[in-house]
Amino acid sequence: MTRRTLPSLLLAIAACGSDPKPADRAPATPAAPPVATTPATSAAAGRRPASVPADLEQVYDAYVADFTALAYEIEAAGADCRRAMVVVEAHQASTQRLTPRLAATPLPDLDPGGEIAGWLATTYGPRIKAAAPKLGALETHCATDAALRAAMNALAGEYPFLRKRRG
Image (tube, rainbow, N blue to C red; front, side):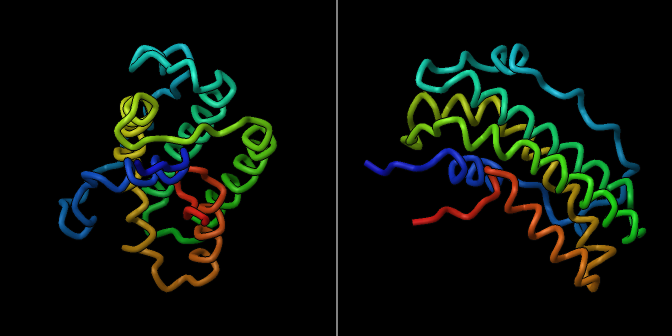
């Protein structure tokens, strides 16, 4: 039986069923980000398994809300790469404030077909999938901005569901 960590499973959830590349879609005006989900409303999507600490749910809610806001703000920046850099720097600061909370919370091991994986997919998958394609504005408008690319890559490492699995 394959065991996965929470970050690697959320990355897999985000990768599944993503929208077509931004160039394949008609341009749209940026929509307002959805209202941030709180632990109480996350539970409505699926009851949190007992093996997932409430602290973990709260910190992941905060990370996913931050990621969603980042995606909408990047989309709204459009071709203004300097504005996009300001957005990325602001989100670097906000995710760094979440890091100690995540470090203090144990991460359960996951079975990809198990109860925890299903809860994660139901609770966070739709929000990550909806937000991720909005980051395509960086590729469309700022692909040659090396500093912005480096900052975005560093920021991606701050989100536990975007980190590369180690070991």
